[in-house]
Image 1: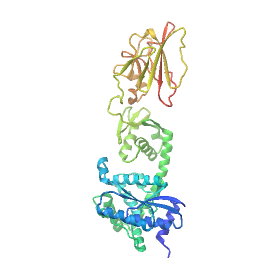
Image 2: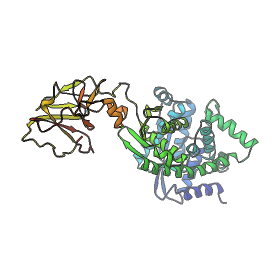
Image 3: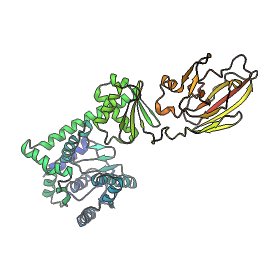
Image 4: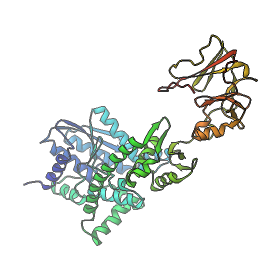
Length: 478
């Protein structure tokens, strides 16, 4: 007699390309109906498609003797069918307490760690989980209730990375009916009845009410919506990646978004691009909510310097034609730079400041090359040494700094120079200065003042070279 349930799951495995011949699988088996069904389905599938199974059971140290019973049940199941078995024990409540998270979240993190470690140990390229149609419906309802977008509708997929879910297309009722028909036993988890947990409340109250009072196929219809959302999500992610390629650039601790992106791209695309940009810095898109995306989009119409605080210690700032998403400074005004620190510049000596080295030397005007050649990662500037009226120092900016910008002595504040050159505020404290009192002789990489320019009367030339210890720096002559 044909096994319609098995054939249904087998078709899903083949249609989605989940398992190939000779695959090595790490299979998560808790002992509950879903994972025991998965175990037997894979065992039967192995008779027509050679594969290697290794079962992993995670003991969460939560349910006492009941958890011990489940572990022993899975161990015996594997022994009966001669399938390799590994038991991993975690103190999930302790981990949750230490890391300030819920027990559910801690359990997910530790299970994933166990699965991926065992996959690496066994050379397995595939991790198999027992999620099914009702899990999809519960997850969609949960995510919608929390304010999710399209991504939350597509959270569970047949295949994502190394993880596969062969049972997604079948319901919990189909699973238990098949197990009973085949005479396969399984364990019941008493905590699944505790409706103080949000997911259990949806599983035991909301979804059954929808099925009984709205539509008997509610779970199936929600699953179908999730399937369509997966396709939309894949398309949207692809468009957003292309959008970032066009309008964004990544730097060490920031992502810079050109504001043109918000005018040229459709709203769903640029909103997803913004979320992905945050994810590139935070390492996750978890807890990046609609309100955060809205704040960044609103910066497009804000004046220079306006900011929005984001999760994970990030901040977004309007910087002229860009929106800069970056990591916040550590609370010090100058991002760790000691602005009170200064070093006297004396010809013939080498000075280190941050990631730079300053070398200076004197030459007679008659023998000096007025414009030096380019050397990799080096800024070079020459001055009339005899026009310098005080002690030269290397330092960072201070209140009251200015440059002489015209031979007649007209001045411009250093702050105004930074504004004119559109230097972001957080970068201004990292620009080294060659100064004499409050007069800035040279803002390295930007411009020098006019008061010490070389002319036909110059007798001695001070050459200052700044070596940057940065990969990919361009040669500069500013």
